[in-house]
Length: 279
Image (cartoon, rainbow, N blue to C red; front, side):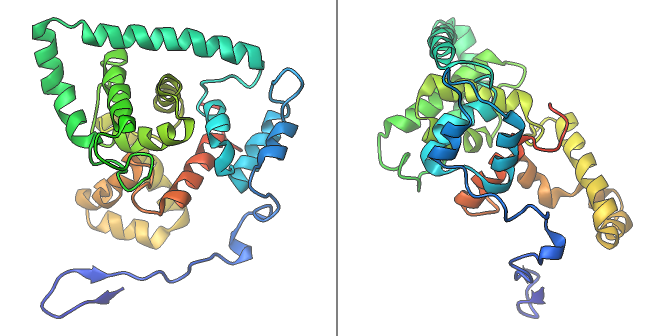
């Protein structure tokens, strides 16, 4: 880290080590290739059920998933599909969930004028501002009057109706956009997003108690692995331990801290829940 100029307070950071030495990585780090079509099909039996789920999680954790099959594999990681489900059962589930999604949307569209005014004030106003500036460099969302942007908007508005206790918070559009771009179907994406918000510890909400829980984990990791830096934060007092510099990391799952391909690779590794308690 170096000072940019004597009359400025900003700092310029540079990456000291772009790669970790093998002594600091997991011994199996380079043993797994990215999960491709053939490897994925090898995990499915004749009924379409996933076999050797633990090995699949391990392969995804170390190797990631090929872009061409993300839309098929992500619904399993996000617990929309059960690993034990057959191909026929998944199609039946999709039909059922599509009907449920339609009912949620109809509930939103059937609000009374008073309910709609409150919904617009508390939810829709923010959603409408966020979706038009989310991932617009992605070809999937690029251009004026892009129907995929409207799909993302409906998903977020309907989620706020489905789960009013959470509603909508800025940043949620950043989480749902990559799922929609891979899964493609609006209803399927909605239920994958529901699974994401319910089941993965990697996602935090802006609510104080949720953020504090995430920060507690991070502080403990720092205390164990980077003692000097942790002691520095302690010396700064309460402000240091609030760790405001990393709130965006937690809320957006590092999406804006890394190139998209690397960020989604991180997401997949976390969603795999390899070597951790199932949550």
